[in-house]
Length: 115
Image (cartoon, rainbow, N blue to C red):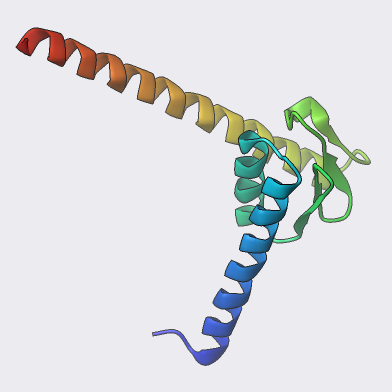
């Protein structure tokens, strides 16, 4: 089981994530932006919202629509690392969409066969 310290940390992390999620929603950030923020936050704890921009490690800024070309910062390891995360995130999102679409088509086929 978790130690009191771990529990406190877990509660704090959850609170911070809720704050950031709530902030993002109130700032009118797109769902893509919110999901990307969550993905980056899993890897790099030091990321926060600034208006609708995601600021990572105080040096990389990702502006809407949050694509790889929207990652700005001084060229270096931080920027290339963040770009890789963003790239992978959207690849994963795309492949999930493709899978959901093919599953939906599969279900339609099965429905039309049984009727």
